[in-house]
Length: 427
Image (cartoon, rainbow, N blue to C red; front, side, top):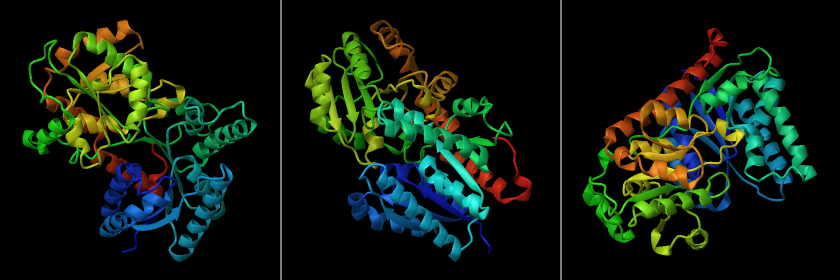
């Protein structure tokens, strides 16, 4: 069988949690649909040593080839240029051994290679942009534009962004909001350029409350000194509010602590469960600065297999994200995972398609302003929110974040790129 050969380029590692949740599940599905997949990824040394064997076995079992390269973090900029050179070299070698049908580039750095390879060899290039990368780096404080070097890099990637969108055979956006922004740009030729929207989907077989029993949750309640959930919500109910993932950068820890402090005025027995790899001592230090007590917090670094159980301890989950321009193109991975477990969310608007998702599915509450008055308005709606059936939240996850739907959308894009009848078609 003459399979179309797709080379998937990722500057994130397959041994990273992100690679395991947001790359491999899609590629397994596409491999099962008949595409020959080769992954070139950049792996952090320590994680690679620890997880190389398990990831290699997983990928081998679904007939995916893997060409891992070691990621270099220093010196800044020059190490990235070196990695790009190595990636380009690896793609050339692959193409000599087995002709490539599509170069699938995850985000902007890998797209430098895909764009160049298309120009030299005419190989179709898929720009899987994720979010607005250059703007995101500035918004997150990672690139200070007062620094001439970062100012130059920002301008370079904004120019490249336009080139990628103009030259790619197809573009993937995480959000409808991001797609609409791109389709409004008159600097792009042949508008509307072909874009498919595929959010950060969740493995809803892994994040499924139907697979979790109360007896399995009991050890976690005991370990964290939390009271089991009840159906009746009163001011004395020991509500548990969860947060999943790292804090800082784009996540608004100050505002989330302030929200919880306001929540405590109504629900004095509430606890804030943080499921994160971040330093517990640093989290406690910041929480104390915002008027919380150490006993208000429960902090645990759950592994992926434990996360569904830990989230399930909570009545609802909270996340506030900086509503920058760059975040219009963002899709929080945690959103689909939380909803899949039948847990509603409390979050802010101004980020990707979050507002549309929450409002259209009645799967949570939106905070419109970061003020005590706005927080209290939201908190007053919690009893009604928690009366909604868990299945309603899980259905919202299937509507917006189904992994199977994501795989089908990627399959559609791959098929349109490799098929002469496939050009172009708009997502």
